[in-house]
Length: 65
Ligand SMILES: [Zn+2]
Image 1 (tube, protein in one colour):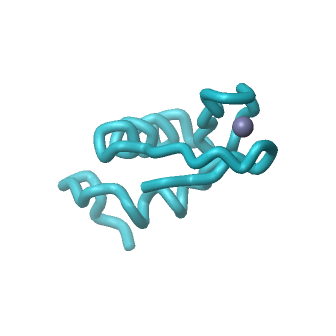
Image 2 (cartoon, rainbow, N blue to C red):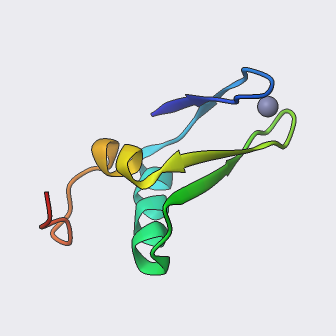
Image 3 (cartoon, rainbow, N blue to C red):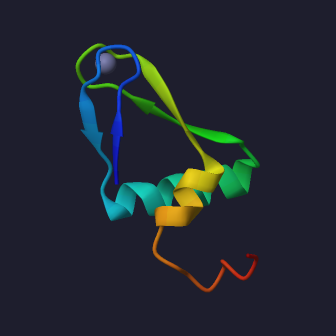
């Protein structure tokens, strides 16, 4: 998955492992977003839970949807 920093437009690549971890975290903490920090300008970009679950590899804990 790749997102783009909304401030400086820097493309930020998120590996599958990162996405899987992010999704696990938002589920565990019941968050609506996962914060991804831009490596260039350090702006926090929010990735919604919906976005994460759409691209994350399926796991056995993903019985919903
Ligand atoms: Zn940035």
